[in-house]
Length: 73
Image 1 (cartoon, one colour):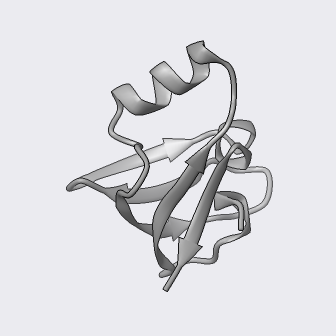
Image 2 (image 1 turned 135 degrees about the vertical axis):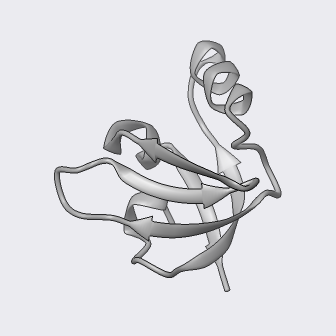
């Protein structure tokens, strides 16, 4: 499942991050790495996806969130 497919109050784990080296370096530098637990806070169409992880609220644009695969619980 892609991060863009999650709904608010979804809890899960980052499963895979796909993209070029620049994208992966950028995403991992803000704390989004394989195996990290997250909670989707807000996911409205045409708006950034808000996720809470590592005690930080992060807004991801939809193109970036589309490249992140997750497992939900």
